[in-house]
Image (cartoon, rainbow, N blue to C red; front, side):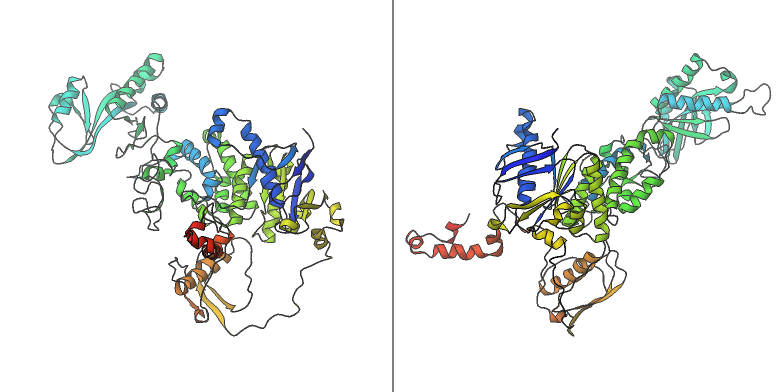
Length: 635
């Protein structure tokens, strides 16, 4: 494999027939002014060609489902690896999508809970264990071997173990026909409400009272099993199978010390008889009818666009059976309600038996790897059940990166679009270290970035420019860092050398008397916050990820003011009072959400300019002659 990715004659968008060599298995940063062609080369040329080549390598049958990908406008690209793009585009708006599902953590959790989870009865809370016939026989033979000889007379036999088949539990009835049929089938004894009686007695019971009836299948004595051989084990096995057949897959064993234990060949509650479904990974999926709440179909709300919590599942989205499977006393919904930091701590402290360790080790490692990455990039404050639609662009990108890092691919090409956006410098360093780790295991990293720390951490720098649009599309300079920083033509390098800088104002505007006063903000992690924001001033709110910036600005301030001034109907965060709103006339939100909702949307249609353009063309003499109205000029 060549040591470089070689691009020849790239002309996509505003790129001006550029050629470039990028080192493989290194971290390369594309920088330059906005609109200079960075994304055109990184995403629309390099990634697009890598994706197209991968699709072309598939069979004709597979390609028919993927469609044909257009070849980017480039003469040749050599040394290209399979490419993975992680950009700033809109993340999933699927109401079912969460942090856990995006990172694939939930998939591994479903496997863990299906394989090592302990099911409990949703009705009575009793532990439910599924055992094979051999496992039940082993438990009985072990008891026979360890039972102590009683102080009974020499004539009596010692170490009595009785095998029962539970046939009626806590139900009213006469059961005359049932008892008659059992007697005709060759059974001799039955235990009714704790008392063993002969079926030949012609038993009569009160039909108005609740009764528990257990058929005596076999009575085993320690004396007979001092030397356990194949025939004697066969007798126990046949007794267990008979008990399971008559007891709805349940068998109760009374040991020689009078203690009792109920075994289940299926997931059935030994106490109330609740039949538990087969525990499979799909039982824990809110996207599957097998596990989703039957009323809300896994949404957690009454309908798709409703905010009213589903009364059946209380917003938990799963069936009661799925919520009754526990690992270390918490179910899968309680696990996903943990923050990423708390979830990682739980996994590290989890104590498993040797058998559970063998089953769960690989899945648990995958979960921990993804949790650790999100900790490394400053997302420790997010909960795993956080909906994808509520994430910022930077958070969504880092979460998608977590799923890629967790897969531990080698020899791939990763193309990232400003992964440090919105990050505090404290968290930025963690992200850069993660990108380096991704590079060190044998991957090529291309990052479109303006962040100074990321540029300094790169192995290779490509500066685009000199301007934007038709004034850009050229490579001003490229080379290894830090040698490239000496370049005189690069505007970016001039800023890196501190030859140019954004001037700090020599004097600030004095604070106005008017202010927006927030009192007692308590939304999310805000701790009864009191704050004054001066009006008609440029105010900056900063802090590490998860410190409460968005909770204050969006969930409290914006939602309240927009409801008051714009007639909106947002759910407002918790606070005592907000004063100073009388100085404002309107509130506008500018966030990272994409503005275009359809493929036809463009800057002219979004800003409303195109309405005036259509009116202008419809007013032309020729348009009037042809009776063309404004709608004629709409696409």
